[in-house]
Image 1: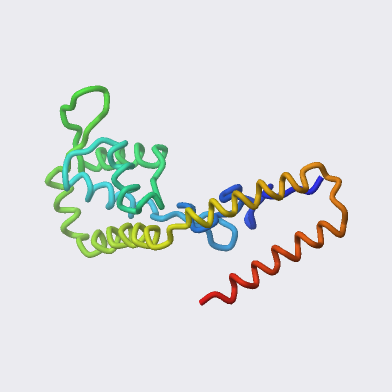
Image 2: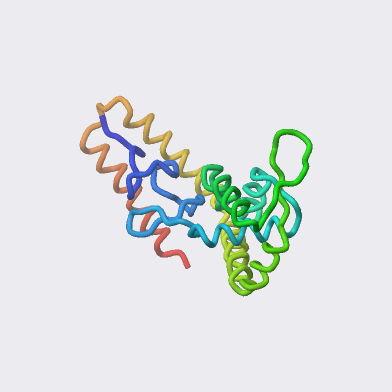
Length: 186
């Protein structure tokens, strides 16, 4: 049986045929995942967002995801330990909140820390907004839908595994022709 869409170019299973089609939030270079921020940068971003208003971890994740138009959302496994570290560093403090969620506010030390790194914070926030602007400019939904349709059509046509070599070459030629037309677009 012919296998389509099993693995992407870097071994992932991102878009309809695998890989990370149109930057669905995962940044790769040389076949490896790239972090959007290193640990100290994420600490500054979280601290900045908490300085804007008191927040809990999930709210921070949602805010970053909103700023990037869904291109990036840090995992809870990164955010919550970072909040613990910021609290240990006396840059944030837990506030009284309703429910079980811990809500944090910035401390005076946290404000001082942000002021000392204002340029770096501005650059990090610009990077987040840039990811969001890029994501909004590249609305790939129609392309992803069409690629999904192609995958289904190929699955129906080739799924039984009894396609002749002639049919396989004919389908490959159609796909190659379309690829060349797309490459010629300006």
